[in-house]
Length: 288
Image (cartoon, rainbow, N blue to C red; front, side, top):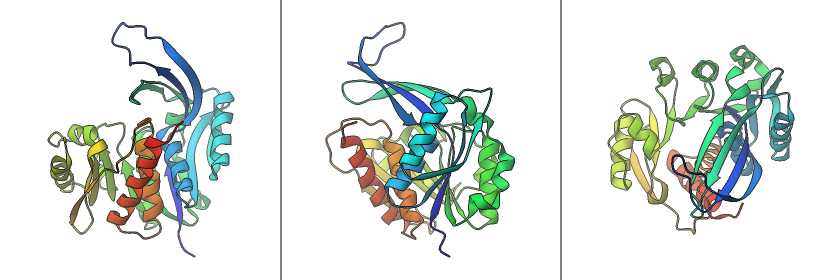
């Protein structure tokens, strides 16, 4: 039976979005124009993006026994993401965030992890979780212990592991050795030791630097595009799609979901990156 399901192990956040003319500076109280709730968390957003890109999507994570958790679970189901391996934990709140978005579509956010850092790694041993899974997505909004446990289960089954190393943090050598494809943005690449990424040329240099430590790497450079090195050591760069920006919020997650939906269908890294770039461009140009 073909292994076409993408499993995402990661975070789920109830996002409170605030619209304002500008992002506040330190000690400034900015006046917003509206606020609204939104499904979020890098894990949840990526799992939904996988489903939107047409691949079977399954989520492993945790929410609290609260209204936020019920909202998050309903959103997963509404997006055709399997939520049977999302645990509901009592005595802890669901993960949440507050994000402020300015008139240009840029944003800043603060997250409170809640239940996301309390997922039980032992639950990853359930064979049903891995049924028909062909690719695993991880991020850095859950504990590294959970990520390592998930990656080990994947590797034992011959399943490739994609890490979106966001938010940036130090990775243990144990975890690095389990990653097949690393995806980072310009800031995350620099925080992992590359020179600053300011365009496609420097993104290519950064991807080549990181490829000395990981089998395959994609470095995204926002409006400039992306650069990558595949598992055969071949590098390529793609300019960004030309669109009118509405909001950059969630663009990286849309990129990861589409990338992995293509990879699980046996597309090459370059083919998958093209599909992902198109999905991200559509996401940033669509009204919320």
